[in-house]
Amino acid sequence: MPSDYQLVKDRAVCADDWVYLEDDAALGDAPSIISLDRLRAENEALKARNAPLGVVLRADNQGKQQMGEDVHELAPYLDMVQLVAIEFPVYRNGRGYSNARILREQLGFTGELRATGEVLHDQWQFMERCGFSAFELAPHISLEEFTAALGELSDAYQPAADSQRGALWRRHGL
Image: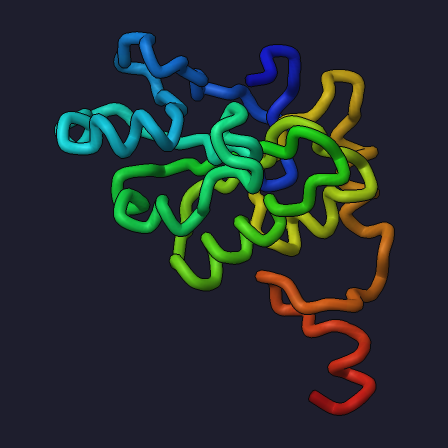
């Protein structure tokens, strides 16, 4: 996971209290982000944990699965986690958008939804529309640049997790 980033959450730069942990690392008292594999394997023990818990949804499952981890596998554990980080390994990998919408619209996840990895300028607005509330950004990106990018497009062409229906739907009175 990235170590040199700034966290923008709910359109504000903020400190990141969360720690990404490898599967063999001990869980401390800090808010921790663990793998889906670890969440599945240790879910009973994790239920007794008092510290906040997050999970990272990997796009390539570390070579185990070509299509990445299935967001639906998080469903039984969503009541245990306060944060879901969705990995974007390269800018052209768009599965994270679908995963975000599934989490928000189908699975009803209301916690922090974080975009991590190749999170780029021209994607921020649509990521937010799909339900992302937090972004791990390169340190040189200013909050002003990020906020301006969220308003660059005045209209949407497709529906997302937000309330905009899109130009086509308005054109046809839908």
